Image 1 (cartoon, helix red, strand yellow):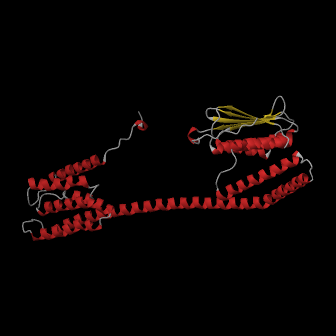
Image 2 (cartoon, helix red, strand yellow; image 1 turned 180 degrees about the vertical axis):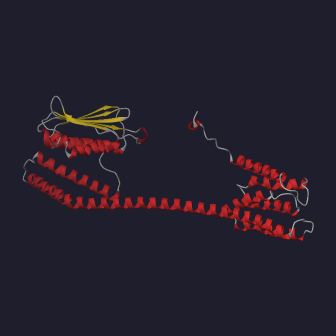
Image 3 (tube, one colour; image 1 turned 120 degrees about the vertical axis):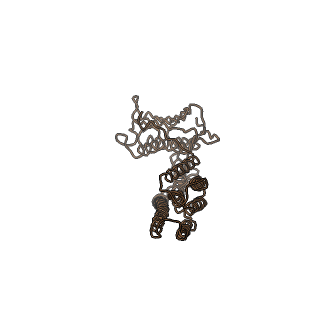
Length: 397
């Protein structure tokens, strides 16, 4: 089995601390055993000082300042008594590194104060057996180890601060980029909303007003109002409503709009404009997510518009099929058109494909073998996204 097959085992923090303390205890005992003899032979009290400083490392992770204080007292007592070796300073250096890394500045000065006490005590002992110069050199070497431990701990602390600051700045830069992108998108939506309002609202309003006036005059003269004129009046009113809804989406970012609850009205408007339409619903009719309902409505709307414009005299059949996890929208006609453009590549069909692709569905369009054109969209219905209450599609015969 290769290295990839080896699973990493998480060792508890307490076990790691105990293992480090035990390793330090073994190290100092071995160091003392191999060191030259000191002024005083190692006895039980000396062993207790050694083990006390080493085993204090068990609390290094939770309380580095307290651990440093215990290790310093034990190490100072050991060296003042003149026991062999300087291994008692190892736990002090380890805890000094941890305390400096944790930012305990005042506690870091404790080992250096103890070192001054040790040097003063060494110089006052007559039985040392070493010249004072040698003693000072040894203690300055110990001071160098302590300085290195404190400096290394401080460097690690600075590096940690630098990494955290870099991560904070990266997160801030990412957040700023996202906010800038959202702001630019909002500004673009507002610009498009202004253009649509200025270019379409005026024209549609004139159509609505003119048709309203024509209908009023016809009725005032007692004449029959043509069905086509009534269809234009209703279509212009619906166009104004749709335009206002679109402008609200662009300005506020609220994805509202028509859904399956207005599909019956869409079919009725098409009929009033002279387009025969049959609406059929198969399967277990139920509510669908708003985005699926909007896509289904727009697909039917575009398909009926294409039939009216390009199919000539034709019967349109709209069929909704509710599956277990899909909603199938199919619009067929028996006319002579090609779906809106040569080769079926009109902008309406492009918009259909984009809506269906955004939902992860499938769209099939093309001529029927028996004549006419078909549009069939399969829209997935995520179970978790279904609304809590059903809103059935209005019936239309």
